Image (tube, rainbow, N blue to C red):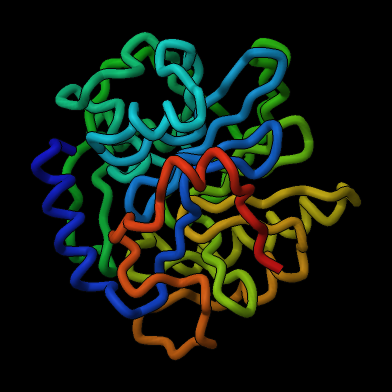
Length: 286
């Protein structure tokens, strides 16, 4: 997605979703000593660091302030050699597109082999009940294609790849070191718990709900505390909260319990500051 198209999406999505409590991104900052976050309008990019190795999870919009905000977290783009992509929507891969600042041009990109078909043009990404085709995303990075259940060792960091189709046909989530699950656009957190992600943006809402059911069973079987970290609405390690409404869809037309954490306009970054990024830990949902 070109920078011009990114700016167009910022303006149009701000108008559509203003006041709906749909987008509740985390601000730039840290969840704990391993996980940090950069806010790009309504989307979050995450970084996982262990033993001086940092893996990036998703690559956000084609966004002009990414390097600046990474600096708030003392992360150098030149140190990013591995990027996990949950799916290829433009708000998750923009920093990899040819007309971006190319901060990560030498990084290896990991994504599901099914999701890669959008990038090669074998499939077109459709939204709004398949009525609208999104622009084709392009990238020149070396890509490593992944299968469901595959386990990677990336410089001593364990990454388990779990396929969760629905939002896109090849959407993948990543469980890192058995403790942190990065879910991209699989789960949406409301004030009263998790739902299947935004209905109008899914390839198949039915499949999204089925994938969440399987994901819940997978996580509960592990019988351990896991931080579930979403792409647009924060994080929680309470699985009862995370999967409270997994059989229901998030919709801008659906009346929801008022959420004090939801800004009127998620694209307003006024409260995302360097001071907060350096001093305030990002609190979890219930």
